[in-house]
Length: 317
Image (cartoon, rainbow, N blue to C red; front, side):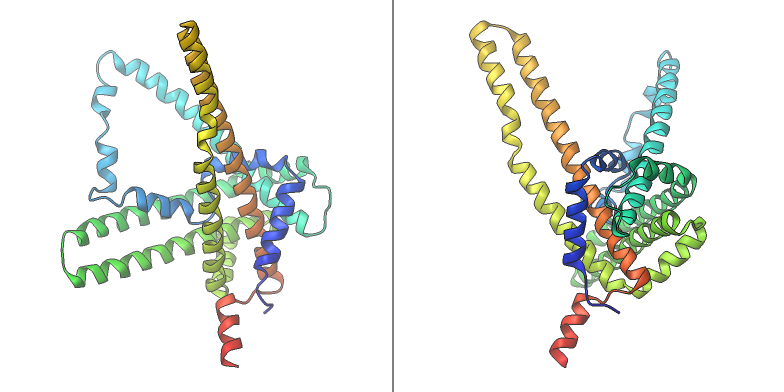
């Protein structure tokens, strides 16, 4: 096995994102599926960490009132529209992620000018396989999140040292399972695009690759998580700049007595905020996919040794 290539992976991923900004569009679209990796699972775990079960959020919605009486027809029509839009969004997101993977693989194979049209066609050609993979991964992660949420709520009811220790064990096992599901999904997507493999065979090979690189997968996930947290914090600190149009138009509106100017300033600030957030999210997604695909190619063809094991071997030798 070769020594860790994390710095090379991060550098090459940054170069890909910097030189091929058109990929940011794919990054934004594929972001609708969620961040690649276990970040969404951790976010969901934090969101549902209060003493309230996952299902209570769903059942607390006023479903009966929505589909009752005269609201039924309009609610049904709204459901049809939302369903059609959801299908379109999911199709674009899945194909875009496939295109990102294809572009990253071709870049690491030495292709200087990435053929975006070919990458898009590869994503579209493998749409059904990628969709089946994503559905399987999402179902497993949601089920794991629900079970973990119920266990956390149950254990938090007991104010004892044993329950606290058991809670730590449950969280550790849950996070590891989430890491395994997410990483196997990443590797399986790589095998689908790169190796033209069927879904089940790609999952088997992805699981085998993960079992050989458990620590590497954990280390890469943590590195990307830290980078994303750092970027998000910078974004949060910079959000005050988006209030400038609202403040400026509000001052003008106050001087002229025009509420229209105030609303225009608010609208402009919101548009700038959403646009910049989408841009940052797309860039991070391209960077994450490119990093994983670099290491996927290395693991598949050469093997990558864990940085932790590499450090321990140097200390013990």
